Length: 475
Image (cartoon, rainbow, N blue to C red):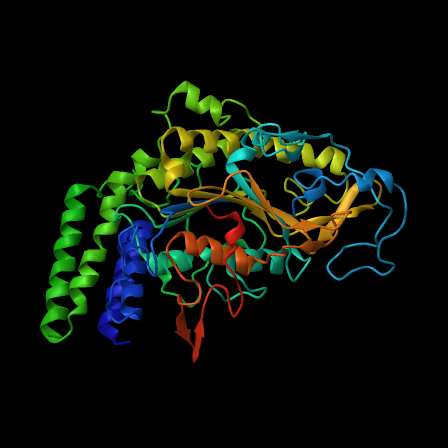
């Protein structure tokens, strides 16, 4: 890289802060692609075949949701309760020895015309089972949080690979040019395991990484506007900075008459200015009706944080973001789904914090007609054991867990696969992250085998060398 470009880059970071940095990320990604913009196919045309899904909201439950205490009803646990029939040696990834079989402390009931079993911890989601398609035999290669979270987000257990949102952004491009294509809404209490590694674009151009929005902050996007304590900032200063940039651009163009990439670079700077106009309105929830706010649980301290982020997810996809990821739970031993000590006391609070907001999101999307082209995905990095840990907890279990999808292209009220009688291992219709990712991409008009990026001499893809579309849950 020559010194002229390097000095221009440094100037932009120092002069513009966060907003200019967003624009610069797009500038540098276009450089990496030889100045060629990412394709922006029409929605129904997709990239490889007609699309049914225009945008995705992914709800990620950080820590490992206990499948046999939520969606995977196992009456055999009650019959075998207290018996020590688990593995004699501690399985890899578990934090302790397997205890006795432990029945679920929660009541299960059948719901909807589909008769789907749901436990009492999810009373609001239970009302929506006829809109959902369940993958009942999800599995993964690890029972460790970090690698498991990487795998469910990137398809690999190691860092250094792009996440699904980045691949979708790279493959389909943006729907609008005034909001980020891929947005991440983390838990207010902190980032999940792997921190920002779950949202990374890795070797893809940097503009495809997730844009982190802190929904509860006074400034959800840091440095979008200059700090008021700097009195010299304002429209006049902005105009002077633009004039200086124009002079530098003309000088650069004069010394590189055959380089047509400059026009593409200049266009990318408009992103920051456009976000200054669009972002405040998108993040302002005061215009929502009391009925809508109540549906998401915004007036309840238990549901307020996750509900606010679910509502913001709806507003963002409504305004043109393609992928929005909403996280429940930070990394660590508390305030997430990693219920080692007591399923009875730890699962209900975290479940209650998301249950009403998720139901509110589905109802809001359907009422606005957005479920006709939006896919909602609920998942986690792995499940939990049917055996007790300590006295009332459950340990990590990568052998089986549950994912559901709702919305465009989904065969509502269906389920695919099942685990064994204890819910310990996926048994029939086994699906990995590769199959889930392949299915999501398929609904967006992308053949997962053809979406590749060459790096270090290898044509990489989200699904590595694996993956099949789960046609059984598609309409």
